[in-house]
Image 1 (cartoon, rainbow, N blue to C red):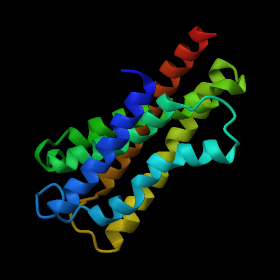
Image 2 (cartoon, rainbow, N blue to C red):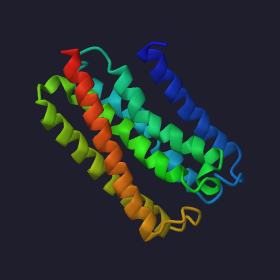
Image 3 (cartoon, helix red, strand yellow):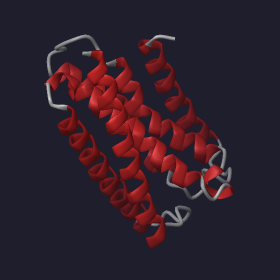
Length: 185
């Protein structure tokens, strides 16, 4: 499978997962989990890269792998909810936070790879992006819960754990991707 096919597979999985939640709103992993908000926000992840790429005047070949990596965390979150893994496996949320931030930061690293930044600058940029992204994510979850979504079960311990695990995953994603990029040149 090439990068373009991978991107379309991931984006197709995003659409199918969102539609599945709309078609079966009463299954345990979907009911009360803010599915309408996910349907409004998650497609933005699939539109962001094409929008920016076109806005920049299509400066190079399309970044299929970066696009796929950016959308993957949203697909994994949806699949975890559809399979009710967040409520049935106590560790699933933790593993997903760590793993998803590897994908998010790796996507960013691929987007800025041509900037010519030194290895440690790339690592720090990726780690900082990952940390900022999880703070924004947790703030958005809090807002959605305050608006009346009841199934999120957010606690202080969960939020702090998510901040630590996501930042650690982002750091790992930054280190691994920066090393891979250094070996490509």
